[in-house]
Every structure is written in C-alpha cells, then in structure tokens.
Amino acid sequence: MYYTFPPEITTKEFRTRITEADDRDYTVSLPAIIQTLFRGLAFEYLASVNLKPREKMLLIHFIDKCEFQSNETTRELAKKIGMSRQTVIAALQSLEKEGIINRNGDARIDLTPYISRMLRYKRVYDIYPEELSDLVKFFDRTEQDPVMTLEKFIGSIFSFTPEAPLVRFIRTCLLSGFDPEVLTDEQIHAYVEIIESIKYNDSRMLQAVSMSKDFPSKWQRTIEFYQDTTFIVKEEYVEPLRNALDKIEKILETPKKVADILVGEREEFYKQMAGYFPVLDIQEESDLERLKKVAEKIVETEEKVKEQLKRFMQVAETGGL
Image (cartoon, rainbow, N blue to C red; front, side):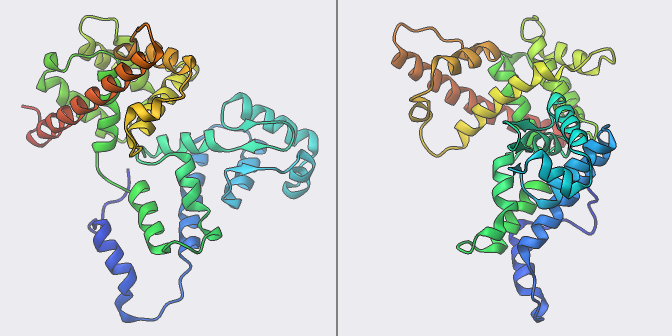
C-alpha cells in the first residue's frame, strides 16, 4: 500500500524522534503537516475516481479547505471556483447522485461519503471520518499536545498492520452466522492472501460474505463469490451493510458496557441488525430482554473474533500449510 523503506518505526520511536529533532531548533507547524498529509491522501484518491472536470474542481475546493462540511451557497461556490452557478448546481447534483457527497438544501454540503471512500481506498479501517475530521481541524485547538495528534494521525492512516481488515472481515462473517469450527487452514490462507493484497476490495468482500450466509459452505462460497469476475458489487446494497457494521464497531470501541449503549436504540436499529446479521436476530417478549440478549451476543461474538484473529495470524505466519 505504501513504500516501506527506510525501515518502519513504532509510534513510540516516532514520538521520541520528532520531539528530540537531533537537538536543532525548528519552528514546525504540526497541524500544517497533518493537513498537508490529508490533502495528499484526498487528492490521490480523487485522481483514481472517474469524474467530470467540473465535479473534480468542486472536490478540490473542499479538500483544499480541509473541511468535511461546507455552508457555502451555490452562488458563493460559483464565484470562488470560477464556474457558472448552473454548472456548480449540476456538479453538486451529480456528486450527490453518485453518493460522493450529502446535501441538505442549497448551502449544506457534507463530504463525509467521499472521505469514507477515500479511507476504504487506502484500506484504512482504524479511524472513522468524524475522527479524521477532528484530527485535521487541529488548528482550532490549543488544549492538546499537537505531537500526540500527529502521532495518532500517522498511526491510524499509515499503519502497516493487517489486523484491522482481518478483524473487520472475521467480525462480519461471525455476525453473519459463519461457523469457525468448519473453517480450514487452507481457506484462512486464501483469505489472508486476498485481504493483504493491495487490490483488496472491502465492498466486494462485504457483499460476498452477505450473499454466502444462506449457503451450506459459507466460507468457501465467499471465496468463490469474491474471485468470480462476473460478480458485480452493488454499492446500494453494500453501503447499508457497511453502516450496520460500522455501528457495531463503534459500539465495541466505546468504554461503556454494550448493554448500556443499546439503551435508547429504537426498533429500527434491531431490524437493521437482524436484517444483516442473523446472529443478532433475537426475538423476545420484552424490549429489555431483547436488549440484554443482543448485547450478550455482540460481546460473545467479539470474543470469538479475537480467538479467530489469533488463528488467522498464526496461519499467516506459517504460510497456511
């Protein structure tokens, strides 16, 4: 994914080196470094996307500001970018139709969908768009150590560990009802090769897993779906599934108990979870009892995810044979 030389360093070593700076006196704007890195990532992804020039011009404008939301009207955008208002409106409508931006009226533009796609393109799974936004907007803060912020940014975006995508994959499979007991080392090796590849497509894998959950040989069928060149990824199908998975991951990252987090979730949440993840399709007479059972199942599944991750990493180290 990235060049790996000179040799990589740990976050601890990075922090030591950047703070010591070989005893020379430098005046460095760490927030400016973060924003420069962000622009580079965002522009790199933009170069890979097939869009019309007018649409790219709009995205360049938003990216250059390092803001994920914009309250600029179409008239203001037209004046700043140097396009007619009609062209700006057409470009915004096209970007919204493609799911690259969200809009709320004439003057509320949300770049979060673009940032989400950028992170998937870079195979970054350890940070969400809103977290990245907080890091990129560090110019507005004075109460935190900027070195720690830069360290977190680099650690999240440029990490070489394969564990994050593996965890996400295993979690999706187990929530979808896959039985880890029937998973072979050969299949694990195949999955590790796929997921560690620079060509790995997270959307393709999510859809393959979801489509395989009703087959007897779920693990093998997922591999076959993923490798099938005629298999077409439908983003309108994958996006809600990804949102449901992101919801689970955010719940797990919160220090509170899962049951406490689920308090207040409405019926729509449980329908969404049950629709995509069979193990969470739990029917109980009382809402409280259902909440407890769903929370228990999420925690129980996550313990199995940790067990399977160890197995995946062991097979990866031995070559799967």
